[in-house]
Length: 328
Image (cartoon, rainbow, N blue to C red; front, side):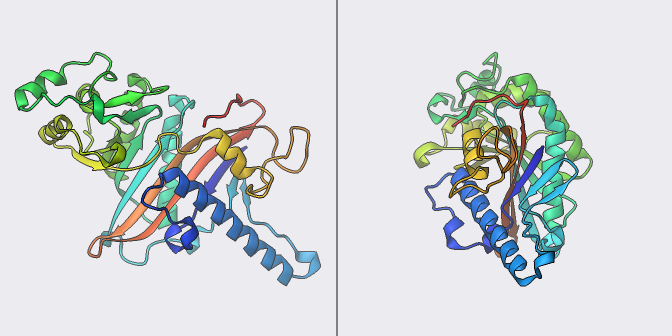
């Protein structure tokens, strides 16, 4: 069965789900999901208590075909308060480890469609994609490339794009998969759904190898600079040369591991009670859980610089055919 998890607009939530400056985005995601689950359960319970006994439902989730929404989403209650042109809307899509790249065309459309429906819009301003297993390492960036000639020389180096040049990997996405995925994104951009595209965790060498394979070049490279270090000079120079804006973040690459997902949806004090308590139990969905993508959206009011709407959707599948093995 397919599961769609949502946080709703976390800017309307209490302080318990607001991320501290030192917390990574998976902490914000998990806390926000759990808070939204609890709020939906309490609202459903309150509604049941106010209804007659024969009309009690207590439903806080919603099933459409083979998809279960956790919690149920009423898209008519969402949306932005001002005209679309008053906002900068950024979306970051995390492709999770262990999921075949062949699914990404469908996954990308699923994620973007949910954001468009949530915000009641037709386009987004910037889509940043995060590929599994790719993380930026400032120590891998060399500092001896101080002019354009050196940068051009370096741009031709790195046969696999994953050695030096600021992108270290663990279970990395292969380069061909990245290119195929990017071509899907280019089609969405050319169809007017996305204004600009961006990548995450790309160092100089990976960018140098990647750019020749693109029709629509990334306008943004979002990198995780550990311990608030200065962005390496070599990457700054190369990005400037190629017209790419550098942004920083503190997101996790594997933002929703399997073990975390099972704890979030399973039985127990901190679980939502969606998954069965044991393989032979009938108190929930049976089978292994496989999170497949997470999308984060942010709508900022341009003239005030205020975040009006921010939230997450996540997609997972549960079933007996999924391979086991938690990723922490």
